[in-house]
Length: 260
Image (cartoon, rainbow, N blue to C red):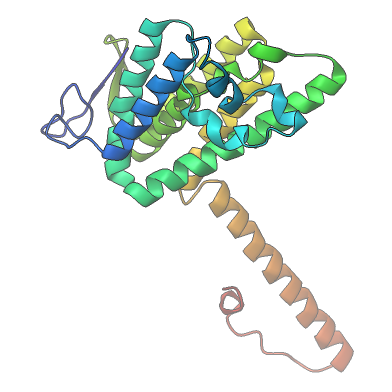
């Protein structure tokens, strides 16, 4: 279990926002869908529904919709642990939702979950062709349903409230920003047990995409910076060739003005 604390006033058991923060309807809807789809797998006539929507190797046979539906299909065999995961998802999800707003919250979930699925599917395909790794029911289990959503919202919390303190298992105080690495560590431990390397890669991708999507210094900022550097280098080379060819001076001006 995880308990979040902060030096801010009004912080309680429910998270950074405290008990006075309203519960987002969007989050209630997500929890409800996860609970319903989790329950369906225990009914013989309805088990086919989550089976078709969960991320499985059937995606290689044309079931591509699973890349988009799998985050909302409840996963697990232990009902008690499943409820604990939903509770943790509620704690972190509420804070992240109100910090980002509805549009940014859903955009973050979509980009991170779909991106993680694409990475995991590619890894699983390569491993299947090589004849190694988890197969069938065991494939993608580390990132199914609420697990990938947990990876995203916890990574988002760790990015947005990096200096907050989280009491891990109610005992060990840990800075929130360290949960970016702890998530990867927990996923690796899960991989050692399940051999689900594709799922492990999916969780790592979700954490990375979440962090990079919420920080200027993330992947988006780095790629943008390199694009600007590349364009600047090309322009400088063109000016150099123009100087040598025409044999006259070219006034450079402010080179940074070229890059927009």
